Image (cartoon, rainbow, N blue to C red; front, side, top):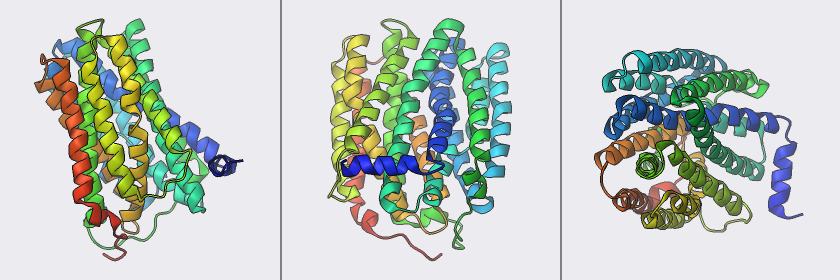
Length: 400
């Protein structure tokens, strides 16, 4: 048996790993799906791609603001109560967004409720990543767990848009959004009741209010996450507009799902071999490949070709996420791990909101311009990693 296969087998044999992975899918699929559902619903109700970009961006910015606060609460009080309260408030916000879409679908009203949904989204992904160090003691198996965690995100990226597309075609985007809210509530409550989550206790943190932001390496990684998040934000709206001009907006979900399938494949390939190069070097190479892959999308003349090109374009997403997890674990100061992962989510959603706004501003431009813009964000991310390589190589600060 190969070393990689043995690591995956050891991981699967841990008592709580199957449950954590399953509940991770249930809690994260709606996180990937709801953004696309909001985009489709806002486009349907306002009739404007630019307005839809504003509504989606409002939710992304609000999530970016809220998730580090949730992360700090988890680091301070454990996982159970912060996750439970956030999930219940979030369900109310989803309900408000759905009612508003039917009764008062103005851009401002939709953006306000989308922001309420975003700011109350529970930090399940950050909590799950912090939990791996509690459940798994072996460093090698824990690295495998982080790789599988990234693949769970890819499953969500594939399944989420496909489910939203199917439900939207059959019953409308409002039903897809409502389903996202219901599954997210159930998945989060399930996660928060699992014994490893209930017994998780954070390490003692230093006294600095800056938390993980006092680490220069974490700051560099957040800048990179903003840029890669912007890439995804541009692509998400770009796919919908590209498909809407040719075969129907909902078919943009096929392109997004193909992108996620490519990412899943990339994660599987990435995990089949050990890597001697440091994660910083690997990240630079991955981001360069990411830029090239996304650049290929400029060649797509129709939706079937776009879907096909999305597979190689997405190959580099999961390897990037895995490297990012590894580097955050290296750079985060003691006692701030959940918050550090939460700030990573903040940066990604901030970038996604930026990408939505950029794509909205580019509405009506040739699709090649939109996809070239997305590729440019990957180029900037690679340059940022190169400039911050020294900070990423330093061990985390242990004091305050």
